[in-house]
Length: 394
Image: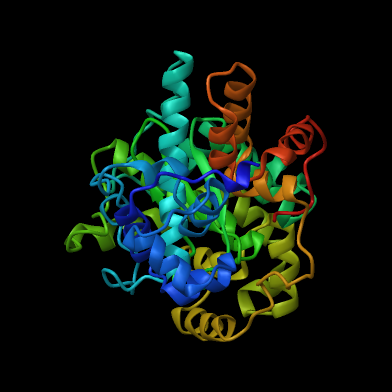
């Protein structure tokens, strides 16, 4: 049977992958339901795991199965060299969950580029650029035009969840891979990106509420345009540059301008007079109307000097101590096919399944790329069929 076939892995690769994931032998043993002694024997090269067991380790370490068969650890697959530094996260101090999420995002981007190469097609490229000295309002308008999201469309979306899915679809249509990950504290990461083309990546923390994810998505998209203009934030492997904080502030301003364009925002806000006084109920209603968080709304009001800095700081402190904007935990979770598409995004899943149908990638590849057992592939394919926009941003 397939599970009894030994995997001729390189023992050093098993140890390397585990250590790079920040996991102890005991933690791996618990997750894989494998005895500690067995794991030690595999890493020492005294015994070999089966292919099924090696694949299980790959799932835990967020590594493709093929990496365990390399003669030595790869030197060009380090997310700390690729991802910009996250505020408050020191080198090598990121959690195993974050480290694995970054690695999986990198792996999927590499997989997508490999699929394009295997099929003889060229990946789409985002060529629009932005510069930090530009007026954020101008860049915000450019982004809305580029994405094809009108103010009326934003108001018509039925909920913040639908709005997130709509913004995500518009960003993905330009050739950006938008991935979601969970199990990471919002204090550690709301989002990050690989901003270089082709196939730039935006990684969003789905522990956040849809309002927050929308802002993160636009913030990271702004980083992509700034990178196209020659202004890339420092990678995680090097010391931050003074320009980094400037680019963070600029990206926030651009995201705010894109989500809440000046004229339309001020006209809509006039219908909710209580928001300039910090009325919580008015802010909630206005937030649900425009599908933007109360904090981002209040910051925009501060930009237009419609609220005082002291009131903004007071409200912001209050919101940071609350969790009403974080989605409630529900039991069970979505079906596997929904989870796969939510995590990897429709364009990536479609690309991989199309290559599989054309036999450009193997069944083992498609399972690794999508992180799902082969028996679920048909369910994933059916879930991709066109349908109404989901009211759930999972």
